[in-house]
Length: 475
Image (cartoon, rainbow, N blue to C red; front, side, top):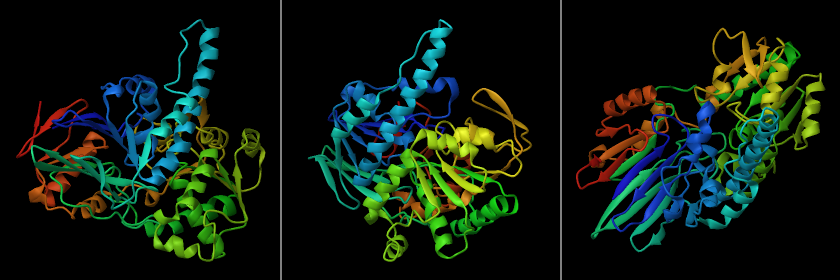
């Protein structure tokens, strides 16, 4: 059989890995969107590197857009195979893919108005909300630790990774010529200690391993410190300086984690009496999915829900769907916390909140997640930054810019290696490192080698390997 690496190679976004069996079955692992690549982003997303009509099965590790965002696009181009995921991933995709389509259609409409005025060529979105709705009919769900037989020769089993609700390591058993080859694709690996999700669980021994490397060179602050760091930032900004705390956040996962921590602080009477605005329709929908799928949450959260049936809300929280109410926050003069998407500041309402508040020294912009190097979220964290361009306008940077890595949904290199210790390194024929910047991957490769892992490959985009008896061979 062969595996081709079609995205998230020596970079973080755009996860797509295509397995072709000897019998001709084509299995796509994830179908993610490239993000934060500037003008080339659209071209990268349109040039898939495969014919969607020829894909038999798509297996989704989780619902984040850099792993699922092109599903409606390949549906639009003729994909009609089965999409296999956990039920939580399906539920989240139902909202996230429609939200992605809405953003694309809105951005395209704004661009075309200017293009027509300037007599330039108009553009079209990758896909529409209708495409996003229709592709949901292809989903088949399977739960953790349940072996699902795609056919007589291919079985898949999901194991929780603790990265986000429903996120899974995909474990494939593929039989060819009477011999079974075992391939594990970790997807994104969560922290060893999460406020909301279980610890990443062991998966069976594999022959070939495809694994992420986002923070392969970093050590995070302990996640237990996140609550104290957040509370300090709230007091410094909202009590001492009487300002606004703007938190750009992924609408799914990070937003709920922040709300859960704020809810704990509120219940413990530690949180000052200030308004908390959640300005993201997607985050509101996603929070409903979290409450509907409590079986995916960890024991601590389920115990909390015995006396607090909604651990993501409290008296001072206001959820905002309406655009006009979102705009009205610009005129809100009291200290407050605004949580809004997106986490990398590439789209969404949070760009407006940052643009309207970053020039005021009493305010704070608090980053709580990974940002690709070319995104606004990364640029805003550059040391010594005095001005930044948002919506084409140069804006003075006078607000405090802070970050809390402890909220990261990705494990650091020590946590990832601890997770991989469920494997016997001598029995793995090859490890493929994906979903990481190249220099980070080189350092992570060294850490892995120091821990006894060998035969590590860092593939480039469109690299194709034959999985042979002894090891993978590039063709």
